[in-house]
Image (cartoon, rainbow over all chains, first blue to last red; front, side):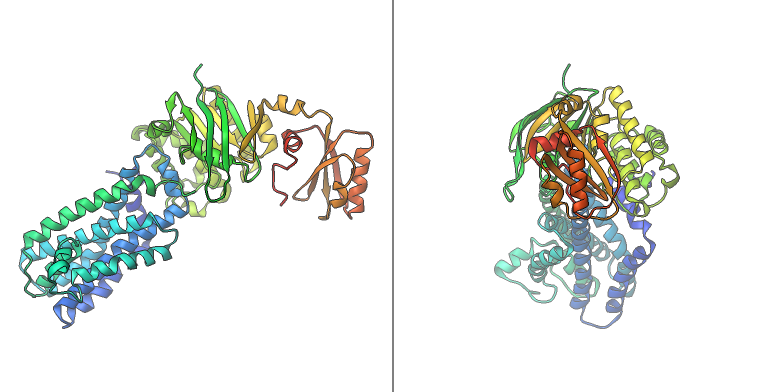
Length: 240
Length: 313
């Protein structure tokens, strides 16, 4: 399979991703720089898990939201939308390729975490899947935000407004033992399952079973992806 | 013969500004080159956006290749070549990668894409730069790449917005030759341009837009013949001048500065050229060259609307 020259949107993004060497280096180094010192330190396990979660959420949301907003502003996405390609296919490729590329950036740091904190294989797989589901959800949020933003600064503002409540609900820092409505709402946030799996990797007990980490985020992400694809025609419309 | 494009009573008005296009009706036949001319704010860009299916009209119908362009957008887009006035590309990809990406997006088969693109890159003198990143391209090279992208899939309808603006002279000629070849092969071409010479030489028919409406259409010859009795005095000045004194000359309809040139549209009457020259001299203008030209489409537009096609600056 030939990636360059690209004949699909995802190949175009992969080509761009690997074409800028210095940017590529930074993309791989910054998760290591943020996560590895935390994993190697003796800070409480829930905070170590929270740091990894925050890095994943930010990478996903800002990556997709900002790059989409920039492409929308310079007109290239509007031009692409005038090809016979389906807007939903374009947006699906944006979402999928960004999630996979973000995951590749985080994977080295995750592997080092796993090396420093050996845990049962099922929890390692669950945590890895949880991070990927978080990236899918975060990229979905980023794409959704791009419907309403005209600049990267807007992305930051909108992302903050959406992510902070979700991070709170997920129990990264506060709300670690929710009850009532907060517990119910937490069940609908995919970040929460990643957080539980990472806590397990760092040696904390969790009520969430590994199977739940695979099952519920998959369902939530499927609904989220469908919702994002629903907005695709609007997202790619020329902004008059 | 079925028109390649049939627009009927197209209206699209932006709520925010109240501007747009109203009641635009025209058709373009296969093999015809149709020009759209109008100054900034005339509705030309809005009309092109509607024709390209980028935005939907508030009312009216649009058929392209016999298909309803409002309900069968993707089929219509597959047969349309499009070049916007300010082409954008993925700057960190090579010109070739950009063109290949768009060619494949338009459905050019993998085994044909390389051959088709090589021919077009050669034609527009881009072959030597095909592997360079687009961010190193000049504006003109970017326009040529956009033309390659518009043509690679063999469209039946071409929509070109200011296609030769920014191209060097050789490239302009190559572009015009390509448009004539395509029209000869049955491709319908819509060119939105205010390059008067280009539109006169290239287009079979022209429509003028002003304040969101099509105010006249016809062949360039028909339109120009409607302004008999108009002269166009073109002077090149050594220095820019305030030209109010020229505008005050009896019979002068419009004065348009174009770079170092001052273009004076005026009635044909005995002594008017001398009066215009006197007006320029009174304004402090130092005339380097002067020519009296036959009326052009620009004069037709000035006569119809009292405004110039191009901005004064």
